[in-house]
Length: 187
Image (cartoon, rainbow, N blue to C red; front, top):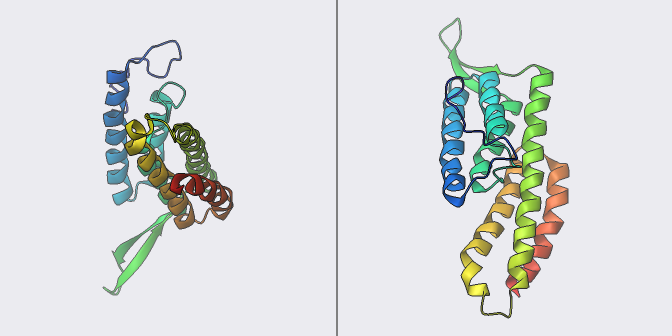
């Protein structure tokens, strides 16, 4: 996945991906996420960021727009940036905690990536919701009801994850936008 697999030029803007191929990319993103989960569980923070960066390099937003499958990678970037505590046995046999952290530059990179993807996804789903809302009062609204509900849930999840990661400035940007969307959604 990291060294041998050929990604079919998904990262090139001149390569067309039909809907079947775009759907398959969700599996690829999921596989990257699962690998990252394993690395985080082992305390391999740097390797987990390398995997996420490879995913973004091979399956970029430009050619494969971010979707719901990017929620987990956002959370993984934030987790790696914050560091993790693993239980350890102290010299006296007592249970202690061993904190694993990244060097500052790598931590900043992970946090910046999580933030950038969060903001990009908020823009994507806000645009989608504006379109869905434009269909209110027409016969077509019923055809996008599921997508509209999912978009609202994703936007809400972006706010929740930003709060959990201590990204107060992002929360301050997203909450008012969500409230405006919610007003239209509930009308």
